[in-house]
Every structure is written in C-alpha cells, then in structure tokens.
Image 1: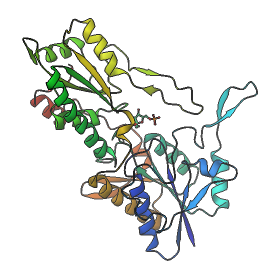
Image 2: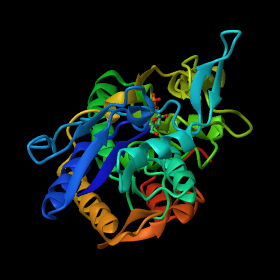
Image 3: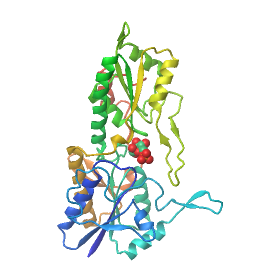
Image 4: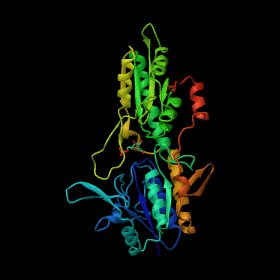
Length: 364
Ligand code: F6P
C-alpha cells in the first residue's frame, strides 16, 4: 500500500475542495494507494498528536462545489518557521522541517501534494531539497504564480469582483457619485484589471503601475458635466501612488509574516479630496468575499485537471515539480522555476492595451 498526503496551505481559495476530490477519485482508480489529508497545512503533522484524516471517495462526495477546504488551511508558521515563545514570552520561529520529514517517514507517507500559493510552493521546494517526495499545485485568487496560465480560484474572484462593479455602477449612476472598489491583489493587479475591463470601470489602479493622483482626478472629472455623472474606480489592495507606499499594517498574530493590506480605497478618497476633487465619493472593500463560496464552473474544471495531473505525477514519481496549466495542457514544471518570479501584469501586455483602448485610466 502506498500513502499520499494532501496539504492545503496559505489563504483559502475557491476550488481547493475540487482539487482534493479529483486527487482522491484518480487515486481510487489505482489498487494500492491510500490518500490522507493533513489538517491546517503541515500543522496536522507538526502537532502532537498529529491530525490527519483519511480521504476516500465517500469523504469527498459532493465537495467539488464547496468553498474553503475540508482539511483546513493556515498562512501562519509552517515547518521552517514554527512559532514558539522564548523565555521572555516573545514569539520567535524555529525550523522543524527535519523533524517533520522524520514524522512523515514514520507515517509511511510516500508522496505529498502541497496545494498552495507562492509561500507554500517555496516550502515545497525547500522540503524537496531535503529529500521529500513532493508535488505542488498552484493556488491563489491573486493569479500571481508564474509558470502557469492561471491558478484556480482566480476566475471566481474576478466574477465576484465584476458583480460588485455591476452593482456599484447602478448606485453610482443613481446618485451621481464616484465609487471606489478595493479588491484583493497584493503584488499583482489581475483581479482588479479583469474586473475593471469586464465591468466597464473608468479607472483601474494596480500595483504594477504606480498612479498619479492628478491623472486619476482628471479622468474622473471628465465623467461629470454640470455636476452630473458617475464613475467606478477599481483598485488593488496593493496599489500605491508614484513615490508613495502600499497602505498596510503589521499583523500581531503569532507566526503571520505578511503585512495586512487594506485601506487604499479610503486613502484614495482622502487624496482626491485633497487635490480638489469635489464630487461625492464612497468606498467599498470587497475583502474575503472574493475568497469564499462556490467556485465557478471554469475553476472547478481547472481544479479537477490540476488534481488528476498531480496524482499522475505522484504515480510516475515526478517529484520536485508543480503542476502547470499551459493551455490546453497540464504539464510538470520544476518548483524552482515556478517560484523564481511572480506573475505580474506586463505594462505593455495586451490586457493593459485593451484597458487603455477601452478608455480606462490606469493612473499614469
Ligand atoms: O494571497 C491571496 C490574498 O487573498 C491576498 O490578496 C491578500 O492580501 C491575502 O490573501 C489576505 O490573506 P489573509 O487575510 O487570509 O491573511
């Protein structure tokens, strides 16, 4: 009997359960494979006692349209930075990766599939270098992982953001207002720019293109004649003005290494008022609504293909690689390559040119 362990790490994402189900179904076609899931990423292995669940076709029945992950996730800590308190009561992190690999050996785990974003795949690569048989599946609503055309969950987030733009357009038009919609996207503006194009926004601000507040003001003013008019601005949480900084704060949660982003919509309104923009403005922060709930059909199909391919890589012993969607194929790329650089929007990309062609102001 061979044992496969599934891990879901980092922020959750619509389609995680569809990937888990696909792996389990594909594994059930082989006679000698048992699939287990570690609870809360690698915490389930690192905890004493460990917490793992058996994943069989009964356990995964009907989960393909459920949001979240049935084996839970975390974006804190991990085997290389496990949070512990020092003797003064302050948090520090320790490396427990060797101990974890020994535990996995004792549990007779032959292969691990780590479904996660950039941070999780960096952990996969480090564990692979230490000898673990590991395969990555790219997951993030931000779509900022390179070496794959798309990550699953991204299109669902774009759909949710676009529906928000559609709703804001009607209230903006009724009240002759500007609405600023803040969406997720730490380093990459994929959700914002796609939602802006799909929803017909007037302005879109993304991390890849630092904005000039005067340009934003001018674009919005064009939308008003004799005080009548409206506009929608879509802004990524990671967008920032030329020469300025991302709006963020330090997290006080133990083991959470990211800064918490959020507040750029409100900041933009303050800055627009300061440079003399006179029309009424309101902000909406979409936040984690973009990560929860049912994955759209496209993401379920993508997730199923990622899952089946990941299991087949385990079967073939093709470790140290990440499943990559390169339309229309699903191929294996070295983890090292996949994490080498983030997938950002090119300033001269077709999507940017399309947005400009539609008259969307990108703030520069
Ligand atoms: O990486 C995905 C993402 O949704 C980012 O866009 C966002 O900044 C982050 O996760 C927030 O994560 P959390 O609040 O769960 O720590």
